[in-house]
Amino acid sequence: MIRQKFGERIKSMRRKKGLSQEKFALLINMDRTYYASVESGKRNVSIDNIKKIADGLEVSVGELFKGL
Image (cartoon, rainbow, N blue to C red; front, side, top):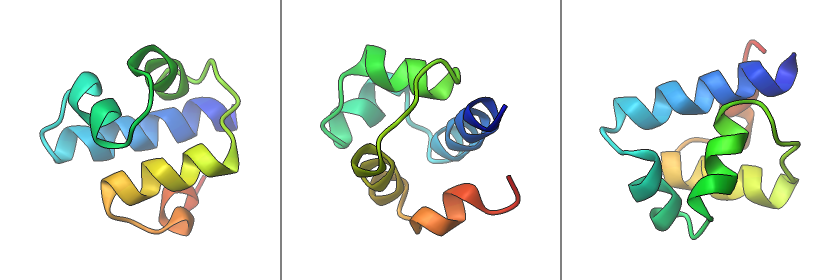
C-alpha cells in the first residue's frame, strides 16, 4: 500500500516538473525500468535511491512521505 502511494506521489511530482520517466531517470542516474517499477509501486526502494529521487525532484526526503 505505501509503495503504491509513494509511487503515485513521485509520479505526480515528476510530471509537475515536465519530465518523462526516461529524462528523470537519466537526471538522477537511475535505470529507467527500475525507476518505472518504483513509480508503479512494484519495487521496494532503498533509502539511497529515495534520496536520489528527492534530490532530483528538489524536495526533502520528508516531503516525499508527507501525508502517506
